[in-house]
Length: 154
Image 1 (spheres, rainbow, N blue to C red):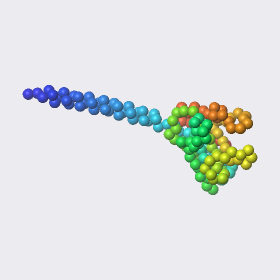
Image 2: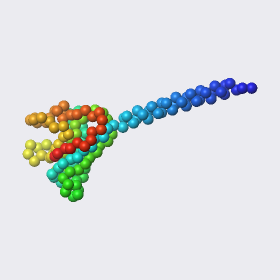
Image 3: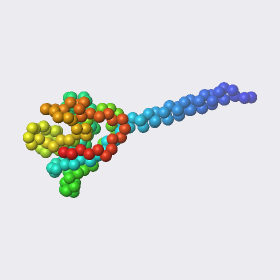
Image 4: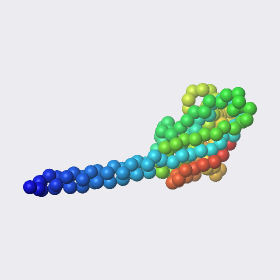
């Protein structure tokens, strides 16, 4: 006697396993898209203090918040003799950003603006002439793919 119920259950199980496989493989594909982009480049500097690199969105810029995508590069004697250092920040989602780089001369962990003797600062996109703080729009770029080999001078 043939067990029809068992055969049907086996086919249903195979179909469910196939559906699960499709869902899992499509989710892995989606996760790989969400991995974000990489921003790499080189910073040219003159002073021997740590360098902070930040990738800032509009909200962080407008509210002066700490960036979710930032690194601090410790400047040692070897790097200091070259007067340039490479950087790389990964996992940045698509969006509109500013790349801001500065040297923290007083070691307080934030950028301090001063008209004279302020901390050295540079950006990926240079603003036009401005009196005061440049607008986000004047410094921003759209990140839709990896941004590589940029140079920022402090």
